[in-house]
Image (cartoon, rainbow, N blue to C red; front, side, top):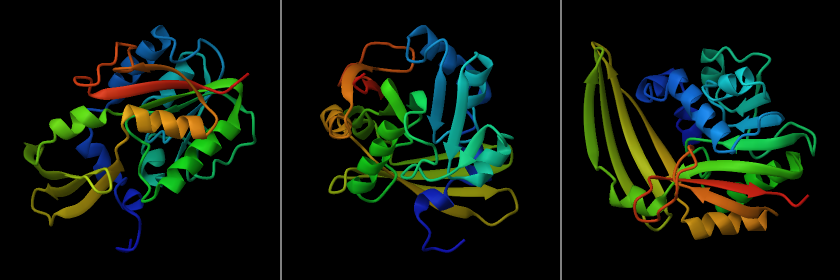
Length: 245
C-alpha cells in the first residue's frame, strides 16, 4: 500500500480486529438483540448493514430471520468474517444495489464521517435514501460529539498477548474531526502505524444532513438499546430517520 491511499483504505486491515477485539461477535449478537427489542430493527424485512466490517452485526441479523446483506470496502475484514455470498465489497458513496431494495439500512459503530469533505458524506446519505424503499428507515450509530470531545484521552498504552498498542488522540476543531494515531507492535517485530480521522456531527448537524438527503427525523437514542439520549452524558447518538412513504 502507498502513503497516498486514504486512511480508511489503510486502517481496516487484520490489525484493526486486534485493536477492537472487544467489539466481538458476542457483543454484536447482544446489540442486535437490543435493536430488535427497541424496534430499531424489524422482526422481518430486508436489511443492508452498511460498513459491516467482519459481520459481527450482519450474521446475527440473518440468524434472527432478517434478510440481511452487508457492504464494506475492506476485503481484509470481509474475508475475516467469511462473508462470501453475504456481503459485497464496495464504497458507501456508490452502493451497488438497485433503488427501492431495502426496508432498513444500518450504519453502526461510527462508520459515518470518514471522508475528507462533507460532499462525500452527503453522497453516502443520498445513496442510502436511493436504495431504501419508500417508508424505509436508516439507523445511524455515531459518537455524541460533545461527550466525545470532553472525554478524549490524549494517549493510552495497552499491553496484551505479546502486543503493544499505543494510541494518541486529538480533536481537530477546525475540521471537526477526532484523529487517532495508532502504533501496533507485535512482540519482536517492527511497529505498524496508521491513523483514523472521523468527522464528528452534533445532533443538529446530523439531523440537517439527514433532512437534506430526504429523511424525516423519528428518534434519537443514547445507545442501541433504545435508552434515552442526553446531550451532556450520552456517549453515543443513535438516530432513526425515515423516508416518506
